Image 1 (cartoon, rainbow, N blue to C red):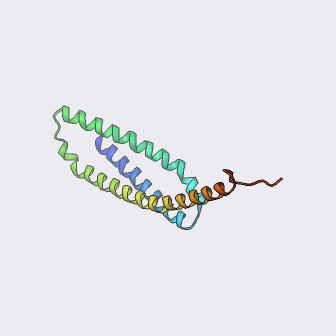
Image 2: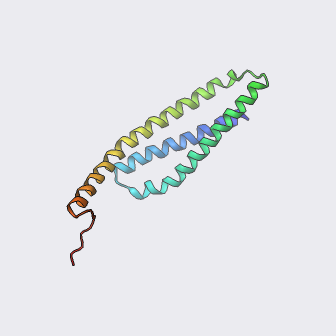
Image 3: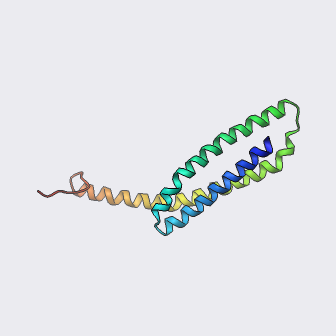
Length: 125
């Protein structure tokens, strides 16, 4: 059971990692449609990752309470942890690209609205 959960977690982590890498490429290419298309899949994968992580913790706890030496799962859990670290760093890279662009747009909108009396679009009647 635990090995199956770890395998599923590794698969989800690999899918998320690939998705984030694709996001980075699409941001560089300004391919916003593909970014939006992937969002719902990424949210679903993150929900699955979270619930499986909780399930893994529960199963490891049960095994430990039953006297099983859970160190037999150490290598698999370490590999999963490395994949999660890779995902974390890839996501950080994506954020470092996206957040400055977001801030730039915010500054542009703030400047326009301040010049137009608090409105983004000035309507001349």
